[in-house]
Length: 375
Image (tube, rainbow, N blue to C red; front, top):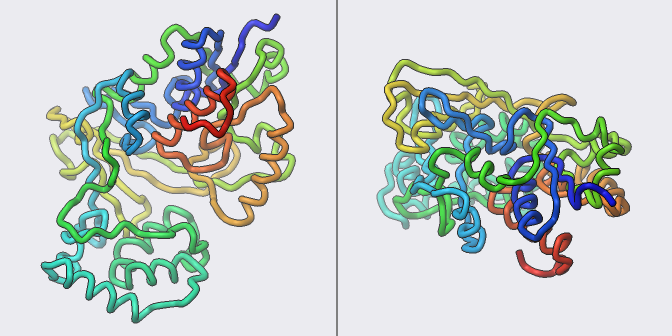
């Protein structure tokens, strides 16, 4: 008899949801986490009475009522609405692209005026079959919005010229002909009061957790202890990069405490000018309407990923898709290992996607209900 039904590698959102639901089903679980803390990239840490998002801004948003009700079992969410602004050479623009943006750009006041201006610019740069991101963006929104609000930010984020990025990265751009600065269309949106770490702690209550432990360095030891492994780490690292490295983008964060009450007046300000090396500045207190006498800001710098760095965004191009297909085929042959999450499945997940995928994984592998059933 093995000691555990499931060993879950990774104490992020996917692993925590799976562990919670498997435990509720009567399964014995162990969670192993390489970092010295739980909650993965949604980890929040209190600094000067402010919940700091240690790995970048995370706003929970979803239109899936089941997922929203699920996370609300573990936290009370505030009414935070994501309304970032963009700084381009000192000019401030509302995001997503809406009537406030278009008025600032062109002085237009009505939706029809904005539509006419966008259509005029689109026609001037129209390409029948866009071959790269730049051509796709010009087809969608025209040159003014592209040059000021898309080009520099995108090139910093991906570390490549927009003309060298595939067109499918931006199949569409959010354009709204209303004076509404709410970035997301989802029915539900907010941030856990007191931070995400407390939410994940509640999910993991009663489950054994080992922090600071590298599963891959002891994989045979742990495999002997469990009927199945739920692995949420990098799929290529699991297979010792046998087919080559999948490409990721990484991030570097510079966080500082400022002796002022309000630094930038908004939780997130994007810097869309290429010459500014960071993509955005986060002022964490605004996520929870803080009134503390000090403030904490974080500058977010994109960087090339190399082994040892944290992988944040998969490089979704044809080359990496083909390489991932090889790893996915190898994963399907690992009968006692379940690969889940953004690193295990090499795809970008929003938090609601992560919860939904974890619940579906539980239904399949804990209850045996099959992949085809909705989470």
